[in-house]
Amino acid sequence: MSEITVATLKVWRAEEREHQLVDVREIQEYELGNLGGEHIPMGDCLKRHAEIKRDIPVVLHCRTGRRSAAVLSALTSHHGFDNLLSLVGGAMAWAENTTPSIEIE
Image (tube, rainbow, N blue to C red):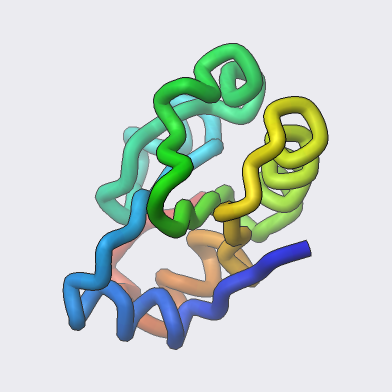
């Protein structure tokens, strides 16, 4: 499985490296606090796959990394994506290491 660390994503964002950030958490989680990415809940990812870019890296994240890893696997096997990365530790790791003011629960 392809993964990306918080440190690497932080560099990408600082350098404004082109990528798509997709939050696969539920709406109430997203509304509580988010990293500024697009919101496509886990249950909708397969049917909304056309909204996920194929020509740039796509970073999927959830709260801890489990759901985003499952979405990565499903999108890869069902729709042939080869540009997906799952954020290691998810939004919790991002909040702990980068933006403690974001509420993630």
